[in-house]
Length: 348
Ligand code: ASP
Image (cartoon, rainbow, N blue to C red):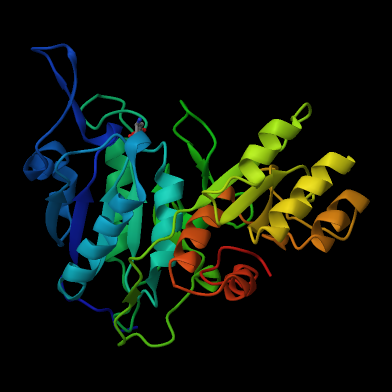
């Protein structure tokens, strides 16, 4: 086997979040540390024969403050630096990491290099941190190439607690455990043990390794989310389904895509549909898929024009809608493309 021995180069983008915090004894609190000191904080990175450059967001953001404009900044940065690096590692707060990774997966079409999100539950400066391990694994994966010199995983992923997951399949499931993310509908793309074992059969490869990706930076964010629950009132459902400001509504339904069968609810869905809203059905279940042909309640939604998001996460459906609606496409085309598997986000 011929191994590509060229030194890999990685751009480490620090956006904020717990991972980059350090205990400052003078104030007995956490504060972001200067990322030019990254090799000092994580000397293990120096043992790799990689060239690692860093870029720090200014200001740093707690990921609860992440906004689609930050995704545009990230996409633009990767686009500008694309030719100079073999892979990109994005250090990001965990709270909205699944949203950001999902959105970026749609915004970059024809990716030929890894874009790996990671972060941590404990700051990198504290003794039991998970940040070092997460960062080291993310860098190693971002730098990994196959025998032909192509990236092993040219996808937008989340690397967390020794597991590499397709970004648009992930969801944050735990607020205090090191295993903070899950990809319930797709097995891991890799697992880091003594060595990193890649699940190559699952990895999506570009059609043309030599073609530069297309970066889609226009997002239409006019999307609302309706979480259906027992006791939901017509007033609440109407405000979200028929509100003037939204072009699309993600309906988080029960089980296989079911919603109340009461007349007032279906009337509101009909009204929203008549108003031209793009209605998308995502299940509240962590795993499994929407199937609107099983129960009468699901069938009614289908008849009213509700689009099946299959086993999509809400995070992924949101990013996909922002991206598709930002393409300047007609509603009918957006609906058609929503049903297609664009970046491995749905099993179809
Ligand atoms: N609130 C933090 C953030 O998401 C939590 C974390 O980094 O884990 O930015």
